[in-house]
Image (tube, rainbow, N blue to C red; front, side, top):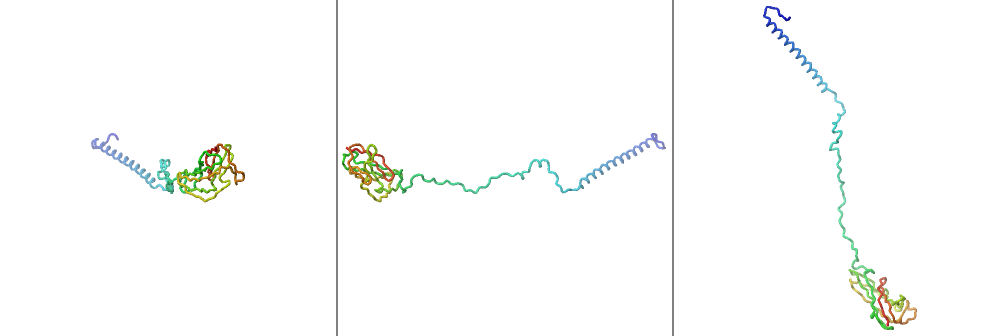
Amino acid sequence: MLHPVGPLPAAVYWRRRLLVLGCAVGVLGGGSWVAVAAAIGEDAEVTAEAPVTGEPADPPLLDRVSPSLAAVEVPTAAPTSEAPATESAPEPTGPTPGDRCGDEMISVEVRPQPATTPVGSKPTFDLVVTNVSAVPCTRTLDKQLQEIVLLDGAGNRLWGSNDCFPETSSDVRTLQPEESVTFPVLWGGLTSSPDCATERTPPPPGDYVLRGRLETRTSPDAALTLT
């Protein structure tokens, strides 16, 4: 085998052997590539022809961990139907012009004319009513609602303007701010009691007190001296 035998030179026979060997190697190599390609094609067909099931494929891991932005609910402020609040004008707290003069809106004062007088004389005592509020107001000033009394130093009642000669009237007035009305009362110089039920006598000399009222509003005490 290694030493060719024939009429031709040996080199010819070696070239023929090498050519045959190369063809055999080429045939063997091409068959291997054909087998590999066939195997790859079958796998691709199996993958492409795999049956499709009705179950959905699992979502990606990131989608399972983080919800989509469309699924996140963003809280929104609830609409309000209330109208904006409006500031109301403050209600007046003071007296209203034309209302009744309350006791806190008037002052009552007794002014003796004169403040010092002899025993047995007949001085005049003025009952003065003044509107001390800032607005006009209305007050009933009837005679039967007015009274002046005389008290001694111990506070004992000695005389009253309505004891023996009570008067009545109907007198409703509107008083302007700081307006005063004066009601003079003449004292006969004698003591008295309600309904003029006791003997009337002149009080002795000394210091006395006059106190007036209009209905429920009373005056400060005013001094009177009898000589």
